[in-house]
Length: 456
Image 1 (spheres, rainbow, N blue to C red):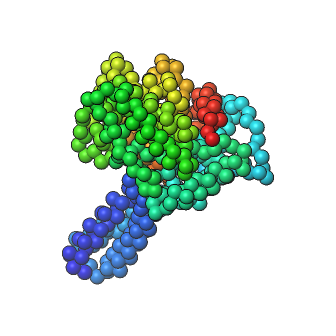
Image 2 (image 1 turned 180 degrees about the vertical axis):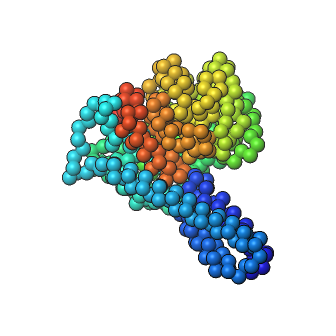
Image 3 (image 1 turned 120 degrees about the horizontal axis):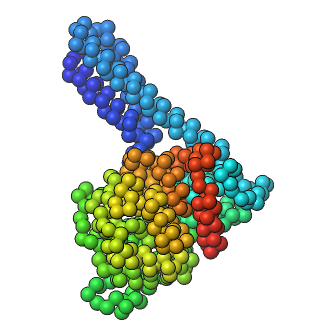
């Protein structure tokens, strides 16, 4: 065997070794299973090739290189297999511990939760998940493992409105047969660059494009109402009852380096807090007329943040006083006057909690929103598959437990649905070991029940 050939296999072994630590991460989730089998095949090939060639290599340096290649390939094979087995066992454990309520096995009446006897089945009411496999999603709905479903472009691509509507109807019929309130069916249909259901739904411009900051905003109210009515009607027609819009982050004109996904300067309504507050309020009130709830996002605000939380941890460096008088004005206005959900983002509010992202910060969620503001509406996280959570020191599992204990009602896992099993398992273990706050869970359950009674 020539030296170039061995060096090529060494490069291949290093590449496979790198993949071993990334194939189960959210960014690779579209190709996770394919990459797993690629790692297994290539690692096995390298091991067998080097063993076969070893006896032909007489020079000590050549043999050392073969040993390194075999070692890397064996580690890759072992680590990838262990990681996959761990995930499959976690998934199996979660599925076995979720209990389905069917017409043949009526749902048992709710009993008060105590720290000693947490109701593990009810933990499913704290998750909204995306999906790739509709049959897998149906199983989770049958087992009451989720409160809601996030549908996006991968779920509607190539389908008509009627086909999408029928799939949603199938899920809702399962819930109806269980005697449960309808599922939350969520979409990310802001308009503009974030129009995940277009097609088949009409692609509208962003809210920022239909208003003119130089004109009296009150005179533009009808345009906003007509815009929201178009969205609300189309969403309701296919069965969507929750829209992840509007963005109420203020447009501070900040352009983020390596901004792959956030793009707040394109999505924000305006830099003017009063304009944003009025437009968001009109938008949400109009959606509610079509039985579609809105979601204001991304508290505590991404307008001043200089990092994309999809790919890295981020900091919001502003005083509470400045935020209260500016960025938080639209949030407070819509919270007080609608049934809007509030999406909690993953930036760290440095003046309050420099350690934890807002989405799992007790100081942000409990102290500011629940206690100081006395807000008793539904709080949902931004996607927990983002690097600001998944790659944080807490990781997905600890962040999930912290978030629920902080008073967040719903954990969103919109992109990589495999993460649901790790997050749910973490909650199950926390419930069993008394690490979930029973009083916080009780209040959250009441909020969810109260909201569920309004879904039609």
